[in-house]
Amino acid sequence: MATAAYEWGKSKRKGDSRKLITPAPPSKDGSAVVHTWTSYRGKYVVQGEEKRLYRCAECQRIKEHSEGTYLVPSLRMANVGIAGERLEVDPVTLLAKHYCKPLRRSHVVGDQLYLEQREVVSKSGKRAMRAHMDALQTVETSRFALATEIERNEAKDWMANERSRKRGYQRARKDKYPVVASIAEIPNELTMPWSSRFALEGDASYGHTYLIFQDDTPGHEMAVFASPDNLEKLHRSAHWVSDGNFKYRPKDMQQLYTVHSFVETPAGQKEAKILVAAIMKTRTREVYERLFGVIHAQLMERFRTVGRMAEGGRAHFDFEPAAIGAFESVFGADLSSVCLLHYANYVNKKLRDLGLSTTYQECWTVNQFVRKLVALCMLPANYVLKAFELVCIVPSDLDGNENCECRDTPHPPLLLGTEGKLEGLRAYFEKNWLHNRYGVNSWNYHLMGGPRTTNHAEAWHSSLRSKFDGMAIDLGVWLCNFQAIHHQEGERTRQLVEGLVEPYGPRPAYLQNDARILAASNDIAAYLQDWSLRRVNRSAAARRRHDALFVEGVDPFLRSMGYLIGCKNMGEPPRHRMQPEDFD
Image 1 (tube, rainbow, N blue to C red):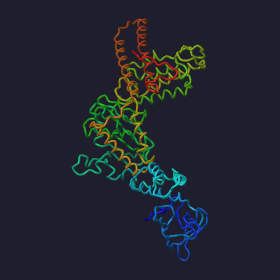
Image 2 (tube, rainbow, N blue to C red; image 1 turned 45 degrees about the horizontal axis):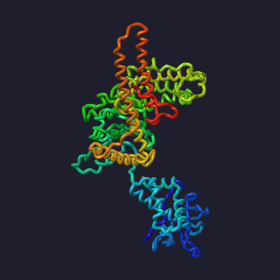
Image 3 (cartoon, helix red, strand yellow; image 1 turned 45 degrees about the vertical axis):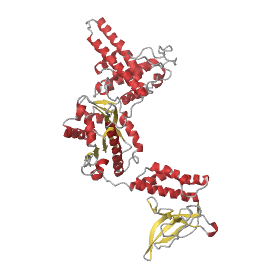
Image 4 (tube, helix red, strand yellow; image 1 turned 180 degrees about the vertical axis):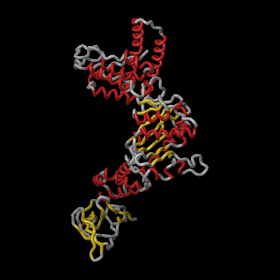
């Protein structure tokens, strides 16, 4: 049995490089010597014979080497392999023998295990991190005779340069994947789902393709992926969740953009699944219009309609103006909603910019004002402006007041100018949210019936770390990775539709929180309907009484709703604050 102790090749950074294990002197039986030769100052020709200069990396000695070959015998290294095993030196050329640095037995074992694991990676496509961990674990169960704990630790330390080892594994993996130079050159086997790629003629998936659009125009490259089954599920879904990812994309593309929707089980439960994916060179409105135009054309071609989206559906975005505008230009106005989390974060960012973060945390009065402002998104859209005028009023007597009427623990007097900053926050909200070009409906979530955030898409993007070979990888590697991911998602979707598996459900705290939001929304809708039916005289006193009834019902609703949509730990009260009662 023979095992190559080292692999030989060319280093991209240093040119030709060679590692040699040569027999030790007779007086040092059982040890080995390593020579690492690196090309030095190129090559030259003497009397018609090409020669090169090499330098030993250990002793820095420079040697001249011609293209002649010298036989190198196989080596028997004591206590390294199993009985009778030989570690062969490869290649069969030797520059010049000299002894510069003894090589530890544990180092030989470490390199050997690394090379064996690398060969496994090149054949199986194992991920680099998994291969690195397997190589470290193999030291314990290796066939090499590392009897002592010290030697095993030395072998692990020798392989512990995770960065360089992982790069070696990643280079080995590339041998498994095809080279795809551009979008226009995607091979046929990568334009179809995994099931269609290996399907036989007569199978249901035979001949299917999921590459529905590709464009190689310089500066506007894009490819869109959606299988026929996924387009059917998108047609039947009333809520689409879209988001982009800038990490796990092909090297020359700017982002991976995905459209998710909800797959329903026979029991009526739902789970979000990715249905459409696109890799895009730019993120302009023009490119987004082409993307949504492709989806619209595919739905019209296959089903004659765009499905439930045109029947009161909603498309959910993370407030990217280019994507929202492009979607509405293709599918129609008033069909898009921004993410509630992003909406609240924008208001909180303005709060921080105004220097009100500490005041918001310490003063209950300021806290309630901000929460009511954010909670306007949960009111019926036609009552938002009136609630902003009557309920979201900046509290008075805050500047320097040592006896604040808030119910929280005592806090230092508020700084002068606090009321002015709150007025600035209110003006920001009025300008950017009440009177923006998208309208109130784009950020209104009253009785929506679907998701209020884009968390489904963002959670899927977070899971890509364990599914792709890396970030900004070659197009051929990305296509192979995505084909496997698409197959896994498709199998999961099939099992959900057939009722073979249970969908991933939200935590009980979230379900309880949603139930409270739904109950409060139904109550305020009924209250406002009764309020609007009340007859009001033209007198100013009657209108004031009518407005007072509005404030009496809406103010506790906004306070309660501000807590339900603003608390980080759903179902748990914030620290050092009282939990508001449910609206009723």
